[in-house]
Length: 214
Image 1 (cartoon, rainbow, N blue to C red):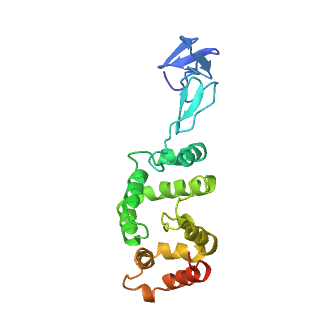
Image 2 (cartoon, rainbow, N blue to C red; image 1 turned 120 degrees about the vertical axis):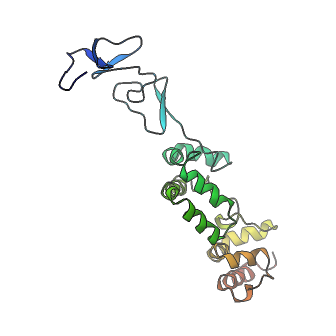
Image 3 (cartoon, rainbow, N blue to C red; image 1 turned 90 degrees about the vertical axis):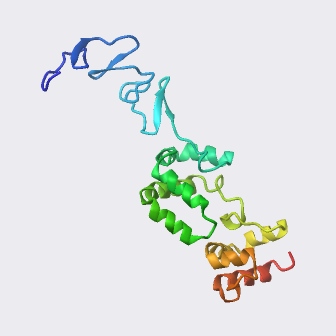
């Protein structure tokens, strides 16, 4: 109740008063009464504090993060919940991180101009989103791998060609898919500029040399 007014041993300071013992299911943790079943600072035992992204429930710190905003894949989602809960919590619905992610997801693959606009409009979410992506790539490289060619969302109609590109040409396919002009050429080889785009020329050379006829 006042500076320097210490409670005697076995007494707890509650609401500014020294109280002999604790009520109900609470026990004395230091000089504070705590319910070990629900107290985030003393969960399950005195001094066992839950992380910021977890709540104490029945004496256990239960993570309060969700992966549904970042993947619909069950295996990837489970891996993120296990390995990246803190990062998911930092990018929860309503955060700057989540807003930036949604903006970037609306951009077409390889549209760097759109991506730059998102980062300019929502700069406060960049650090947390980068942390989430870094954790995903480190903790869940297999479970969260993109379903398309070479880590992209692009595929050809031929299973044999897709397999050949994966095995032989990812080193040229990936930079092509990341370049806006080359990406357009992948979609339509008749696009203006394909004949002068270096990324496209390197990729086509690999495809025609290693995967001809597929």
